[in-house]
Length: 412
Ligand code: GDP
Image (cartoon, rainbow, N blue to C red):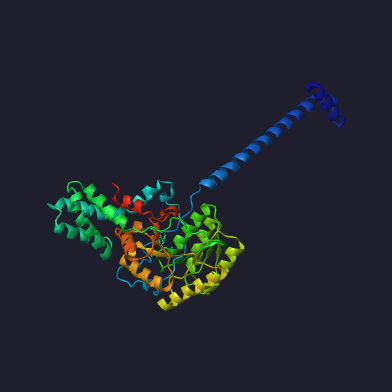
């Protein structure tokens, strides 16, 4: 049947429906035109909807995670305060606030990130070393004494500094004074030899979730480190539960909730001031019930006394171990690189109380004294597992000793 025939049938139908007979063919044409217009509109609407949807998905996939605000200096202990003073001082709590995505979140070369993070240390350490080479007629005792001072003031610590100077003394003939790169290479090799690197991967428990208990005094970057870790695990497709065990600091639980939302991780929290061991118990139960891959447990960083804090941490350990035998599989101590040698004292205090198994050293980007990494490695029997070189998620990096040394002496 051709189009004309259809049109005639439609015209008959319209005349039967009451359209005057002389207007039948015109009304039929109009109806066909109207139907075609409607059909095109529907097709256009469908196409638009599809485009909008795929655009939205693309935007979600490429959206950068929002990163915590910088309060870096606010709660950081200085050289003059006692190592656990932060744990006792009444500090007003800033509200957690999600902030704009920093540029650092752009996918840049990871080595460049490390290099940028160590810029202050590199400028101070390497700059002074090169000036020293230029200002001395020969690599004599005086040169070595001044180099020793540079290392001490870069927080390498007495022990590592003396070891490094001794090793350099024996290798001076390898260094041509007019070639600063040779001093960098020899010192770099000696530093590398003193850096411990732990297992690159987190342990895999035989059954149940990997439990990481995170300890450290207030302000070191504990909550942020937990948040970044959670996001990194989630990005690897792991199911994460967070336990907001720092019930002493209300803002900590809120901060964790913000991170939890970013990472798609469930956050178990109780009311402010409640028993952290109860949070640990509920978190462990939730992690098992939800078949989570990882449970990261925050703990208090400040209680009324050091003894209280340490007893609390022991109790949390016991509770978690009861619920998930063998847990916590890792006890991660967070230390702030900007607190210098205090970080070492904190580490010793925590080591005595809980079986710390590894260290996260935060805020390396905020100090010119990155030698603390070497001091920690040579004076504590603990591997540095993670380093923080900025506030972005990707700025929390697994510690790689070769990369650290290369970034420390990299040319600008
Ligand atoms: P907590 O009290 O130990 O839980 O400390 P927070 O996690 O609240 O961190 C205190 C401040 O340090 C926050 O402003 C963080 O953004 C900041 N911070 C944490 N890690 C790093 C880091 O590696 N580099 C820099 N620049 N800031 C950091």
